[in-house]
Length: 187
Length: 89
Image 1 (cartoon, each protein chain N blue to C red):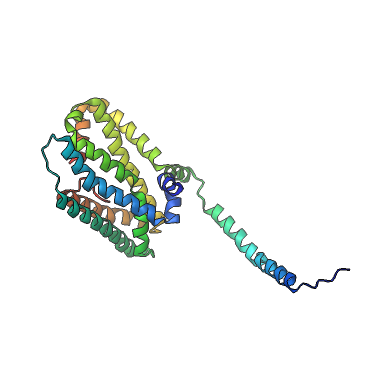
Image 2: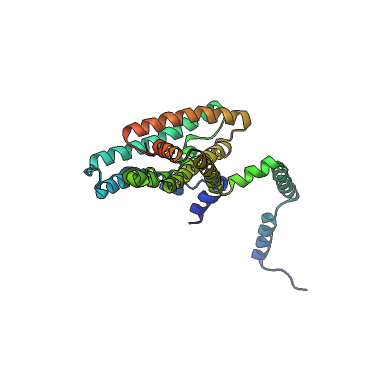
C-alpha cells in the first residue's frame, strides 16, 4: 500500500525504489480495463447491441502487453542514443509506475464510450470530462519528463531531444493502438 | 582487578570496532550529504519543479480546471464537445 501511494504521490522516489510488482500490476490493470472491462460494460449496457467476443479480448490483451514491451524498447533505444546507461530491464520494471493517469483515462473512456449520449452537448459533463482528460494528459506528461530525468538519467538538451523523439513514437504507437481497438493506448 | 578470561568477549569487542565507521568513511558520508545539499536547486524554477514532482496530479488537475473554465466561457459546448470527440475516439 505504501509503495502504491508512493507511486501516486512521489513518483521520483518510486522510480528510485523500482518496485516492479507495483509497476506490472498497474500495467495489467490498465490493459484489463481496456480489453475486458470495456467490452463487458458495452455488452451489459445493451445500447450498442454488441456480443462478448472472448477471442478479440485475448487478442487485444496480448497486443496491450506487446505495446508495453515496445514502448520500453523505444525508451531504451532512444535514451541509449542520447547517452543514457540504463538497462532495458530497468525500463520494463519502472515505466509501469507512471500508469495511474492511464488507468484513470481508460476507466473514464470506457464510460464515455458506452454512455456518450448522456455527456454530449452538456456543459457540466463536458467541463468535468474536459478537466479529467486534460488533467490526465498533463499528469502523464509530468511523469514522462520526470521519468526521462530520473530513470534514463538525461539532462537538459539531451532530455528535450529524447522527449521529442520518443514523443513521436508515442503518438505513432497510440495511433496503432487505436487502430487495433485499444481505445486508451497502453503507454 | 578482574581479569578478562572470556575469549569470546574479546572477539565480540573487535566485531563492534569493525562495525563502527572509520574516520575516512565519516568524511565520505559528510561529503555526500554536503554534495546532495548543494545539488538541490533553490531558485524559483527549482522550487516550482519540486512542487510539481511531488503530487503531480495536483498540478495537472488544477491546470486542467483552469483551462476548462476559461475555454468553456469563451467557446461554450463547442469546446467541450471537441475535447470529448478527441479523447473518445
